Image (cartoon, rainbow, N blue to C red; front, side, top):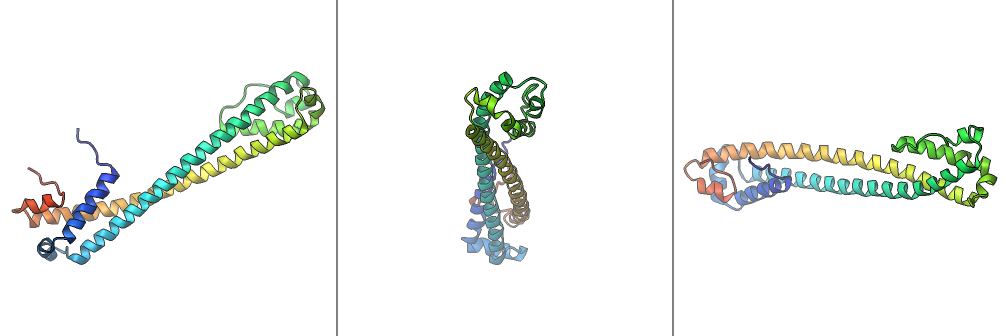
Length: 214
């Protein structure tokens, strides 16, 4: 099975081929009648530069997306740890099936998906002040509730940032793919023309890293 080239191998191969052509006046002399003069090779270089730039942008957005995901995970872990403590104490002191019990969504299992989790925790801290005196009996102060509520909001904000980062990464990938396809098309036509021009002098092709079928 032939291993597929990585985009880095592809970019380096393009750089070597175009750079080698530009450094060889005799090669350009032979290729010029086929439309590959120095101006055309400079154009190929510009396509490669765009591809490289878009790949770098994609990598930056990819790293940003990873960082935003880690930030969300950390914020969730910290906030959920406090929430579970408060939840367990609330279930001890709040009367089951009371308004406060239902408003704080104390029944049932805790949602694992982020959207469901946010609904449960926001409801809990929105209505927690109504039973603040009962929670205080377990050592949970109003200040601690407010602090944890702020942590919940930080999770919600981190989730928005993650979604925005994911969207930017996708846009960067689409831009990179567009430039890559244009570069691949140019290289494909160039290699076809070079193989035709140097059919009897395959060393010229090998010097540019162009694979010569045996």
